[in-house]
Image (tube, rainbow over all chains, first blue to last red; front, side, top):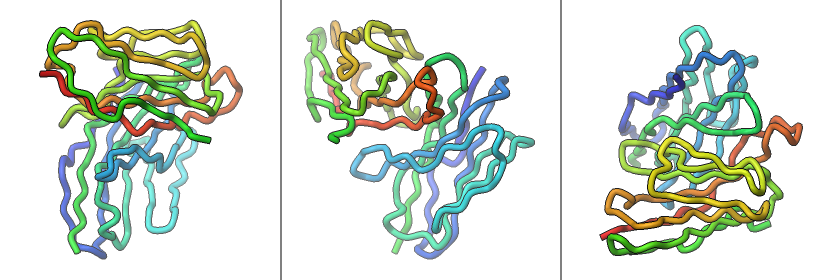
Amino acid sequence: AQKVTQAQTEISVVEKEDVTLDCVYETRDTTYYLFWYKQPPSGELVFLIRRNSFDEQNEISGRYSWNFQKSTSSFNFTITASQVVDSAVYFCALSTYGGATNKLIFGTGTLLAVQP
Amino acid sequence: NAGVTQTPKFQVLKTGQSMTLQCAQDMNHEYMSWYRQDPGMGLRLIHYSVGAGITDQGEVPNGYNVSRSTTEDFPLRLLSAAPSQTSVYFCASSYSRTSGAPAYEQFFGPGTRLTVL
């Protein structure tokens, strides 16, 4: 079975704090993709990152960084020096690499509130 | 490019009514899908299509029909609306593996907020 767990339902931080959003996944496939999407209050879904299962390098993009650890089946997302504009629901998602499908299994999301 | 467009943005239905949610993309993506988003449940896949004329069920297909007559369009039909179908519906598209591109990023439309009374 494939599953994505985001145990943190809501997180509240004060601006400039660092915050880490946790994502734990389950899959028996050896080839798969992991994603993070952001959903700001306006409602649209914004793609942040894609990582394939063979690439365990951590990635940094500005204030955002991602830590992928196959040993613990985790793909955590850290925002450094958070800003009010980071307030959103963040979804972690899993997609297996098979056939022509591109089905995404989403976690339940983490609501991040950054207070000024 | 307009990307993925969805209409309408908002809709209120009475129980038993039928309607079609429209989705179109102009990126020539083979793969299109419909998700519903409910509080505390993330996004769940309703139906998907890997190309014109090919559709399949996702995780929560009951009460919904789809068809894919063109690459661009992927409408979602509610046959007899029920209050349990009150949700936000998202359409998404992407390249499929058969295109040779490992680009599994999905592009989402702005969503349709549906209320069934």
